[in-house]
Image (cartoon, rainbow, N blue to C red; front, side):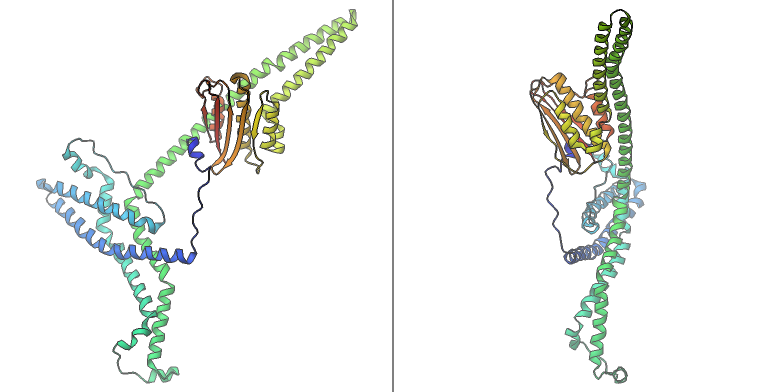
Length: 442
């Protein structure tokens, strides 16, 4: 579950990314891809020779134990080449390449640390990449080198055609084409070929670079990325289970509170109303005036009961929230509070009903707690739309001491916020007031 700081990190606003013209972006990517492929060919040669030599020597001499240190050294060397390759493929793939998890040695001795790469799967994948990377590197190098030579040579051929030896000219071809100059035909042909290579240069170079880069990514980070995806899926499942449990707990808490409020309020008044009406029925025969007074008192009890029922219905689903939105509902809520409320809730577009309902209940429960327990003289309520969602803050200058721990009044509110996928934080030092912050995702 993310923290409030994580969800509000973009509140101040991040600087917009600089826009680059498409032509400049393509040309810059062309340069990145070209240098990646051209440099990858000699690196692939060096890596192939060193890795296959170290691996073959280590395997061949492993029977006399000398090969084990050689094999461990080859794995360590291939890890170094793998680190370099991860740095190189990042600009090609236009993404940050994560550093994979290598198995740490549990041994404290230098011998155990030296041989730890032998038990690490990623180190072996690095070695496999070092041995077989020459295949995609060679293919990519052939295409990139050919296309660059074809582009530059074809477009500039007219400038150095004079310096090349040419065989005796065949006069039949110029006459057939209607030209008198064989050199013009030759220059035109090479210019057309140069234009063809130039037009197809970017996709060919891009495809060649991606071929080599994706091969490296699959071996150097693919397993670790798959492991991270599994971990993220498990974390998402745990978060969903936590939200489900929080929703069940919040619902149970709300039902218990509603049951308690009905029992302590309207139910008691209805019992008294029934008793008053029964007494009035008996008094009509003996003392009509006293019966009328009893009925009048019963009518007063009826009005008070209706007011309490309306208050309870507003707590369940306030009509103003559904009809007019969060800002109007919070304004009405602040007007009913017994403590002066400084409300900062600008009008913005309607949000998801679940988000609006949760934000409303956060403020309603917080104001109720402030009125009952804080002894505050003022409370400030702020609702802000941020990049990551909705930020609700309720701060008072009361006695403090509030807590999200189980058994306290805010525990049910915390469950309600978690059920909506948000987080709730409370700062409430003794004697310094309380600041409640809820971050709700949209």
